[in-house]
Length: 506
Image (cartoon, rainbow, N blue to C red; front, side, top):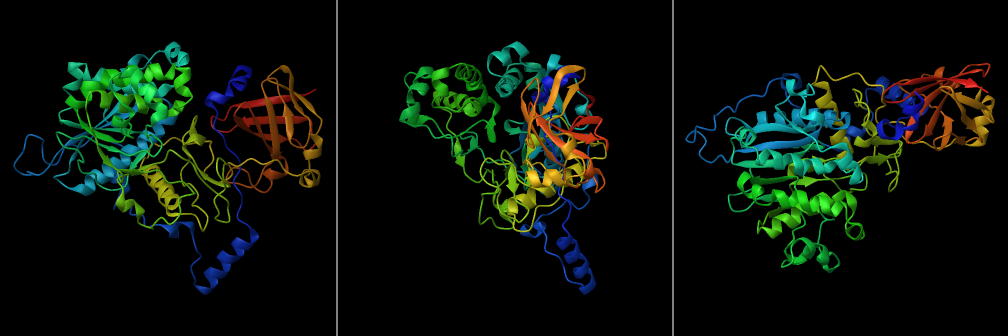
């Protein structure tokens, strides 16, 4: 337990308690029921179209195309492509993959017999390449992931498994033979198709999304020339490998450079000064493609990445894009205002909360005033989760309560038992010194500085619970603390995986 606590940052799931409905909002609901009027909802901000019967599209064997690929007469205008969902075997990736595959099936079914979306494979980089069980729900090809030592030597950049996996696929004839379509779409687990997708590419021109943060300039020209001496930054397109639709033959031309450049960039401190680490693999793709004269059609409406700061979104914005990429968290105050840049919201929909546990069912809707992106995405998650009868139970929280703010001293002193913790010291799983509650906010631990505060009423902590419960955060992990009424017993439950530790007062 002690070792787990010390290393909690890697596996922990941040969580907090959810704010209970206010007396005013409860009164509004009661009054609306009495008068027959409708209470405004954060789900009014968008138009969302559920599948007619989502559970029919739940987990199960992959359906063959309604019209086989060998039939070239029934659907003469069809240009079929195979979706390659690049993934790893982590909890974080698997729950996203399940939602992604559900929506792929939903849009494929909506597209009819002559859909271009004919094939799907989860290309999973797994330790030892062994099946992880998810192949029972979606077509999966297992490959051995890059070694732990290799990833650690490149600063934990697991994304390098994407070019690695694609290269293994393209260079292994027995695997490549399983992908019958000429075109492939490289996709990510945090993609959700918003509507049926047609093949945006041609045999001469692959198609890719335009990333605003991927524009090369004089400042990055030396990086381009390091890997392509005769090249220029002007020839490098503002794209990444995903989403992109491209022929297998075109991708094979530069897959080695995609991998090799990505690896070298991740090891280059000078490159880090002008190319952020989290996009270096994307640069590997774009430089590699340019080097081999593979020019992509730039598709600006291929996807969208809206957060809370995306204003003036139409209720049906999703009809003008193909993919919702939830790379950014959507953070709101409960009054409907954006929480602020780089801040966790009182209402928060962020994939990063679920690194060690699945999102729970029935995620709470956004507050009134939130934009259409928040409205659409929470419903897309809920639909995909609801359609999956085998979705694991979760100890994690929903969309409310992730924001952690220290309670003010007056509130702490007014709490029934908070004063019993102030100044106290506790062993943690036998480790002494363990926790020391130094002030109304600060906690000292053997692993890192921490903080603590009052719980608020939530789906997992009722009105009675909040009278003796607190939140605790340290080493990137969040815990729920329960203190006995006499202040002698303190129990911790880590949010996400539910690990429990009984603390002993010193």
